[in-house]
Image 1 (cartoon, rainbow, N blue to C red):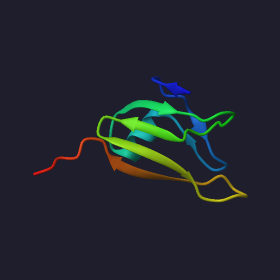
Image 2 (tube, rainbow, N blue to C red):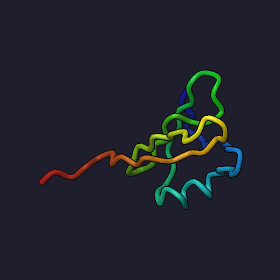
Image 3 (cartoon, rainbow, N blue to C red):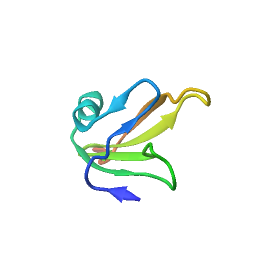
Length: 75
């Protein structure tokens, strides 16, 4: 499901609020997508990036964010 308002989410060690996420991403939030029965988003859209949220461990919920430019400039 896609949400156009930020929905806070947590790992075992950190809670991500809108302010924390925007500071971490260095960009302004636009939307986020959750897959079925998951409390951590799979994708987050910002003004300039699509961010893929990856889980790092099976035992402890650890996340990494892969930023992909939304509108790359081609010369």
